[in-house]
Length: 170
Image (cartoon, rainbow, N blue to C red; front, side):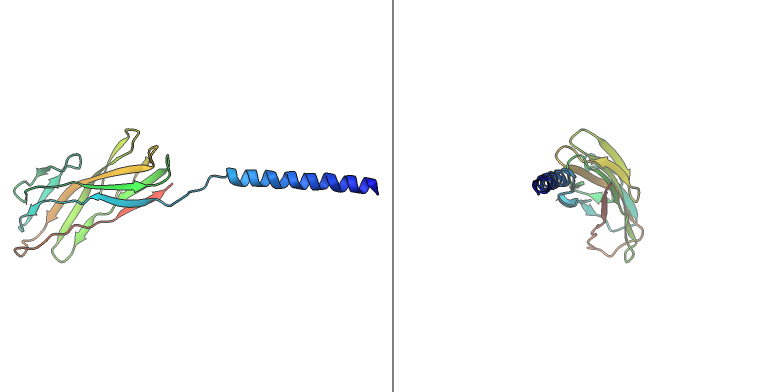
């Protein structure tokens, strides 16, 4: 009988040890605390756009118009967006070309991805690029590109450029 109690005590200790080991293993398994999100820091602006056929190109490094300065006038601003995810996470980012079928206006993005490690990757519309979030978990996306106006537009037409930033943690 005593031998049965000793065996039962050993089994209980082994079971308790097994539970502690399982808890330790479960808490050691990494998990994603939140899904990656995109936020807008600064909206993209080509300034005042002359409503005639043509194109202009904005440099994503500084927001300056480098081609088509007679079409895009006044103050411009490159777009600035941030992808936030867990630190040191690889993220695939793609900006989708924007087309407006009503006015046959299109926008082909050129962009720069940057993290706080100093990594900088240039990209263009519809082509995915991969970068690792920095130690702060942030990827900065600076957007410029080519605005194409394929027909003369009615005067006072407001041109709104909207596009999708696709992002996937890898």
